[in-house]
Length: 314
Image (tube, rainbow, N blue to C red; front, side, top):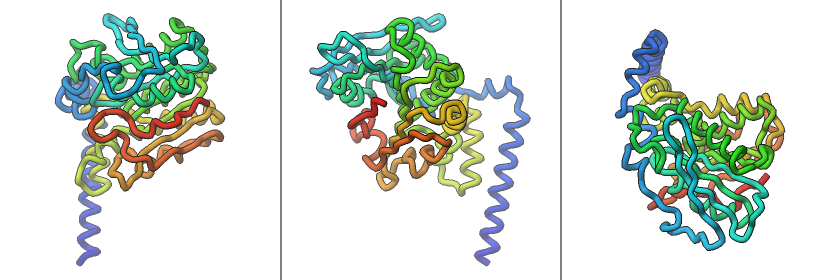
């Protein structure tokens, strides 16, 4: 009886997966664009209040006495991207620059604090800029206008600012992606490697594997059904955010690129722990390192990222 029930459940899950796949496959692009609603997209990126939290790094709990913080404004299309540049105090020369790509449900500054402090103490400058519709960037945008493609475009604009305005050398730039920002950092690293402008290294900190797995992790459904529902949820949220695919492409273009994977422990209840995303097993990277087990990917009571101690300088 039990075996028959399991077989029936498997067939049901497979049927649900097939139906969802077919619906997504035949759905015209115009309809896909239509269903990227504000409601569904904000499940992934956060509501307007979350994204525009008004966070001021110098008014927070991090001791920036060893840092000099300046505001940054970057022209992007018809609008501007806003953020902060964290420089080591007393250092006029920028030896290395870490570009921090933040996650969802908050501003860049609300996540970068401890990391920026630690990097500054090590003599590394940090650039943290909000994507459109986050923090001080593009306040008029609603959730439906913030797509995966838009975030990738903003990541490229932030990198371009680092090189053309700040004067950072490509091989002295560390790309640091946290949570949803891991997809942006991994894609940018792969693009740059293919263009012959590889960065100094890549850090993926509690990075999302892809939207399918992220959505599936939030659903109380059997495996195949959860993945199918998660895949369809990716259609509704405007993108796949497929960090795993970007890593495979990067591994082919630059297998010797230094890369560090950071994540919380599975027992801490972190759905983005490396034991669940398994991002650290992807590709044939010869210079990979792993820092795991330091707790969930966000500290209790705040949006600051955990595992910010001793960040890699490559």
